[in-house]
Image (tube, rainbow, N blue to C red; front, side, top):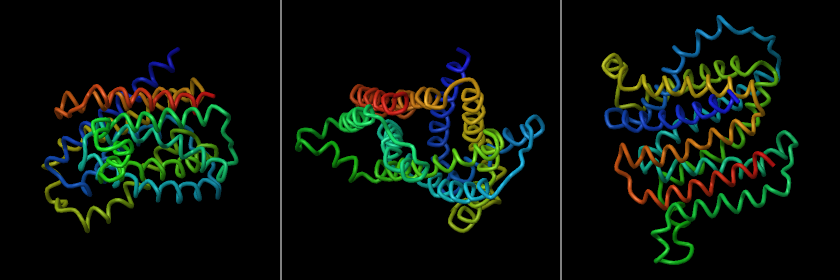
Length: 287
């Protein structure tokens, strides 16, 4: 059961990445933070190249890298923008919509079709998202969902969840045509490389201040890297759906950390909503 430990460590690192990213956003803008999140993961990932076999690469690998990498340039920025605008406890849980969107994109891209439990999983995810904003219920039955859609942070995170449902299919193609660690390193290099010009032209924090900001952004890069490292160890020991399902417990951790570190409100209802959404993920992923 060592894979369970690695999967839980993946979830913990994923959540801590969010915490340190939001803390860093007090000092730097979203463009600088989005690039830093990927770039400062590389010092912890690149040494792995000395310990893994370099695979022979083909056209499918490069196509997958182009599509997935380009999508994740955008999602990295949108992700950081979302948590800069709204509470962790209301934005991060919306990432559980990714498996819901995968029920649509996977049959189209990789011809993988969901079973009957997929519909039940959708019901739990939608119910959980409704519960996240339950305090809006007094304004009307659909108000909790309308509040999520109308607020900019959750809206951006829903876009991330949808885009990830596309890129994750190409991630699978990339891993199948290389190896898990090589794909993780390659995609991180690609994303940080193409985020650089966006940061250079848009960021209010120019590169001259980088030495002063390294210690501010390095923890987020560290936890990004170890999210990948622990996840790859876990999927080498167990089925991917099992690992990803446990990884999604990071949603609950982020709700708790949002309350502890940023004094975010409505802990009880957001925890309840997060648990319901994770049950939906389990139903979709495991069955």
